[in-house]
Length: 483
Ligand code: SAH
Ligand code: SF4
Ligand code: F3S
Image (tube, rainbow, N blue to C red; front, side, top):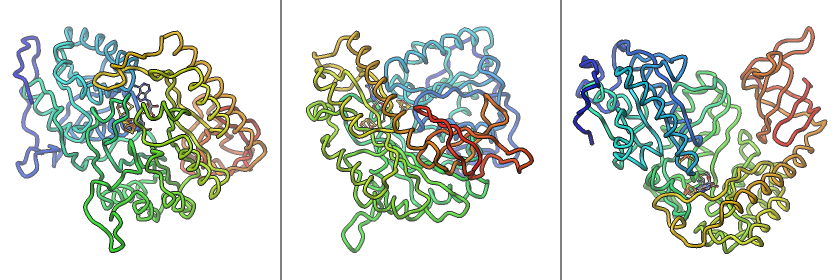
């Protein structure tokens, strides 16, 4: 929907029509011939990898429109905040950033101010009331429509795009931060209903991309020199549920396992990762595929959220602690050295001290390589936010500190197994703290620093697979020498 622009202070140029508005497919509105100059842009991204991937696509669209990357947030002609609302502190951060830009806009009406992502979807029009200086509020399903939305802004409208939308294939080339590793969305949205989570409300229903589109994007990336692909979905094992077709054996025609098999042989891609897996849908078939496909890295991110069955039930996660353990056992049977990471929430409503201890015990017992932790944060329009058994703030803080200490200790112990080993590291870039060093990750996803060259030896470059002997281990990173 769009609102008439009632702000007298706003004085956008009338906006000459772009060649992209051909009437054939005005939707993405990309210029077909040379884009006109439109000034500089800046995107600040909050939140998860989905948002990072959306920002890279929006950056690509802006450059195709004629915008150039700006040098900072406070001088760019167009600023996008791609926002996250997973927890209250993530949301509040956005408002403080917006406050500063609103002030700038009052002094410089030519500034174009955009809020994209999950806060945009959650708040919609309410954001315009809170920050009337905004030009565009757009939910995550509208990221690939940025060009046509901005054209309406250029035409003088204040635009809110938050209606449920079938996500279009992106026809601009994403502007990616890395030249080595790339994200590729395979499924958008989430159909689960975890009682704490805003994601289904802000990202909408599951929408799987067609396998051909995913493969095509991967081939394009390989041709441009990318070596590692991370396939993305909120609940990636749900891939294909919404696509039509049944096999002669009576199975769904499109599953995530089939997708992996069908994209595995893209030439030039050396490594494939995926995130996030949901324990409810993780299958033996997927574990077998991971073991059989050589490019799939030995790292599995499987958020378990709690080590207590009653808490899991209250969260509506749809699995038990035991089921989660069996998945991990099964992975370790096939891939003994695999790294396992997870997300966990502490101080969920009603979580007792004993239940919290079960989460700590599970982290120790499994030996997670990495766990993202958070204290429960009540979110708008989620069931758990209204429950009367909320855990007091002081207990949240205590539990979070305690779980973090356990996570770090266990991770350090897990890192110990690399000591003295030779690991294959994909060089991703130069160590910002030491330009003689490169950094990258092992197949099991440990960040690793190593020298770019031996004295008189050839210099390694980002994009190369390098054999590194690990000399120093830390909880979440490693350092080594060239092997
Ligand atoms: N789809 C993924 C998670 C996506 S959200 C999954 O189901 O595992 C990323 C993480 O944020 C979640 O795994 C959870 O640990 C955390 N999270 C989500 N909602 C939260 C809330 N209300 N409070 C605290 N942490 C939350
Ligand atoms: Fe949120 Fe649950 Fe969906 Fe993950 S599976 S995004 S936690 S609702
Ligand atoms: Fe945040 Fe939205 Fe991702 S709420 S965690 S940016 S899906």
